[in-house]
Length: 205
Image (cartoon, rainbow, N blue to C red):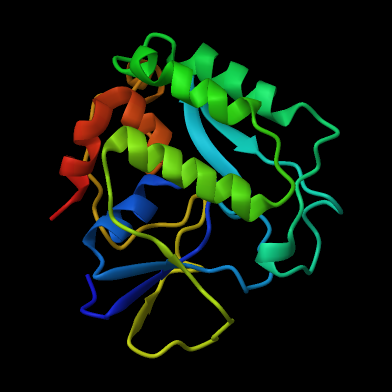
């Protein structure tokens, strides 16, 4: 881990476990709002596990994924019932996970709320995870874009689907692991439903 004063993170939808690993170990964490939206990233998607392996849950966007729009201005496309699809997928995948039933009601409220902007979806997903994980560390947001931020651990482009990680993340008993092996760095939802709020203890130094 770097000794940088600030850890600069991308603004993710139900962030991956590595995102929380770095957030938990940082001095000060900040989420980027002023970069251009980056397609095929965790900015509008998260990954979970199901009976047939990894599942990607994507938030549909106005103008699609191939847009050059500042992150804070990216709008959600609500023509599709994406929230109910995500919720039904989580129920089907995690109904038998050890801790799912304890968080079901809070999760459903999130998926019933309507959104206009992707950053609001993402921050509400992070706030919900924080509350259920009993994790109270603040997360700041950027006020402008800086390509090379000073005294900063810049992770904006590091945490990508299928990208190898520099850090070793903890192992835990994962749903469907007996079928297709352990899948690393899924959404923090996976660790929450598998380990409960002790998940953060496993990620903190």
